[in-house]
Length: 465
Image 1 (cartoon, rainbow, N blue to C red):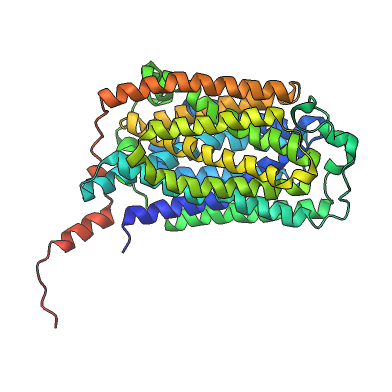
Image 2 (cartoon, rainbow, N blue to C red):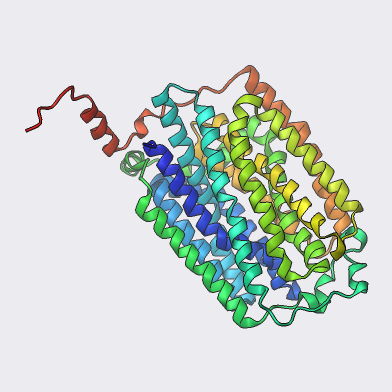
């Protein structure tokens, strides 16, 4: 029998898998599908700008009032609204729904991280194990399941768009402009990157809306309200509004969080590069828009498998070794992308880069999330809100300069942030090694059903009639 906490981890993971099957597929397509006047990339920039705003105050307020479970459900509805906005994409539909999604983005991820951290500490206390080990394991399982959403979402887009009858051969003059060889700002002027047939777009977006609604139902029905008692106590003994409102900013007084800002922002830079630049300037330019899904599936599969592996491997190697391995992998990929001139005859190479990028991203996601949970156990909501805020700032900056900076300079910027991260992160890791943060006692989070079960387990014998 699996533990109740493990079951909850699976429910959260499957819910996010379903939700991001839709959003991940749409995000990968925005720079190519809605390329007119940079509308797609602009919508992504608005999303992450809104996440920054919501990170400043919404997560602590929503999580403490609604609890983790219902915060997740409410914020999932915000993501579904963006899929609806893509049904008839335009400035008046994409931008408002981007704002709605962004406002729900930070509370969603903060609630998920808080939930997994609580569940990990509870399970560790029961088994007599270290909290960080179980938390790492739970984040590894979550990202193993969650990251496979890139496989299913992109498989849907490639299979549906592959039915388009307007797919054309790519002329040699266009191939000369692919990759870092050219600025990469006018790729979308070629016939091979025009929108697929409208009926195919509607079919895809309708499918994405369906799986988004399914995610909400999965979490609402099957997820335990693990922090219900704490939520009730908060509503009864409410702190002043300004105290909760400023919780995210108050945590910035901790020098460890400030020192982790470059590492956190890099997560946004590297994800936005793959979703916005690699898909447009390498894949769409040289192969066509219908290949984006297949290439990003490779990223998702690699990310999913490596998330599971590294989540378990961390207890043996430590976080630092994994972080430096991810940095080395990304460094090699960036140098290679500066030199590579993509061509359809080199088809396997288009899949090698996302596979390596996915392996590195698996480390950035699992270990950075776990690190925040370990360093700030008493301020989990505010810590994960900061995580989303600074990661989203990386997304916003990257998407903001996407339409006017040459690809070569974009690669140099990603490289510079990576190198800065590898200078600042070891400072925090060294301090944590010398002065470990004591975990908080999570025994209070055992829910009512588990308390009854614990009492029943104490019955020595019972006569059967």
